[in-house]
Length: 73
Image (cartoon, rainbow, N blue to C red; front, side):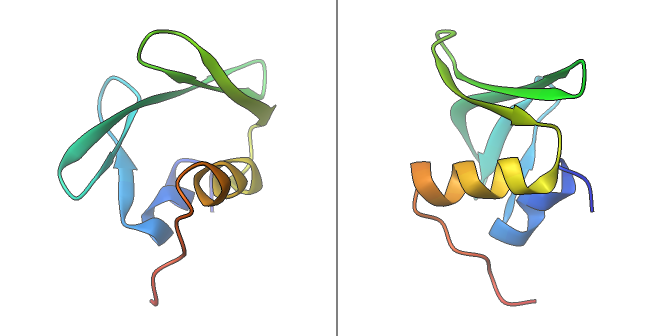
């Protein structure tokens, strides 16, 4: 599993601009990767989180920021 596919466990995905989309709605949070690090920021550029480019970083962010839970497979 990559950090991009980690979102699918929560019913979410990335759009072409890197924004998180869930239930057809873009949520105004963008994830970018640079030098094996993730940068998670708001639409206005405010830094929300950073971490290594792995699934645990994304999972930790969405569970803490939106209180999402993984959906049953």
